[in-house]
Length: 167
Image (cartoon, rainbow, N blue to C red):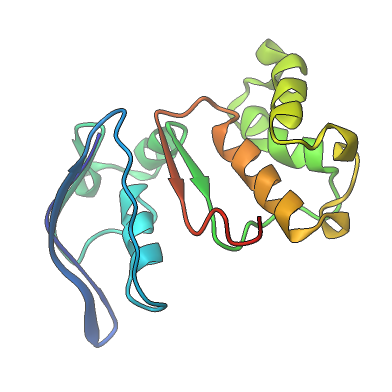
C-alpha cells in the first residue's frame, strides 16, 4: 500500500530523513519511535502525500506520488485516515459534525445517514458529548474525536501521530 524506495527529505538547508526504504503492507502494524524533531511527523506526511520526497520514490496504493496531481492526491487521502498530533477541529461546529466532515466533503453523508456516525461516537465513548463544541472537550476526548474522524470513511490505512498523547 505504502512503499518508500531510498526516500530522503530535506527542510531548507539540512537533510532530515535519508535513504529510507520500507513497504507497509495491508493488515500490518508499524510503530515509529524517536526523539522530538527526528522526523516522525515528516515521515507520516510523506505516507499520505502531504509532502513529496526530495529524493527517492514514494508509492501510495501502487501510484508514484510524483506522477499524481492535486485531485489524485485528494482521492488517495480518502483511503487514508490520519490522526494528527495537534488534532484540529472547527470550533463553531459540534463534535459530531466535526467527526462527520469527511463524509460531508466526500458527498457520502447522505448515503450513510447518521447511523454510522452514532455508532462511531459510541465506539469512542463520545455519545453524550456529540453536541459539545471542541473547546469544551478534554484532551482525551479531543483525541478520541480525532480517531473517530480518521476512521469514519473506513480507510484502507490509518496513520496516527502520537495518538495516545492525551488519553
